[in-house]
Amino acid sequence: MVTMLLIALVILVFLALAATWRVVTGPSLPDRLLAGDLTIALLTFILAVAAVLEGSEVYLDAALVAALLAFTSTIILAKFIAWGKVMEE
Image 1: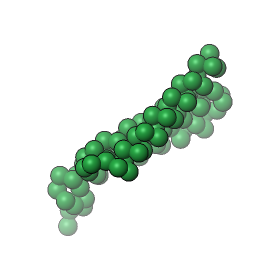
Image 2: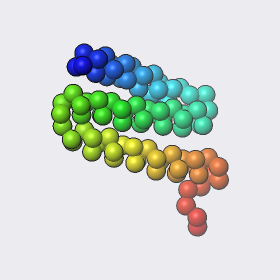
Image 3: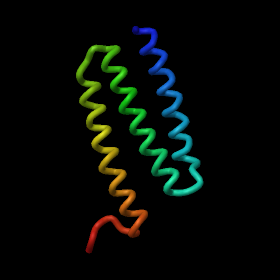
């Protein structure tokens, strides 16, 4: 089981690197936004697998915080793309 988790962890890290590359080189802002969401989701999965491997709940707390920040930042960036501003004046 540990071997399978390590393989999953390596695959997730490579996928996160590929998604981060798309954030940096994305052709448009919505593509970068989607790649950023994917990167944070993969980070959440990486932290969850690390929590199982290490047997530590700290990684699960970090995964929860990353998921909540990803949701909030997605809403804020989508609002900025749609309306050109984040806060009403």
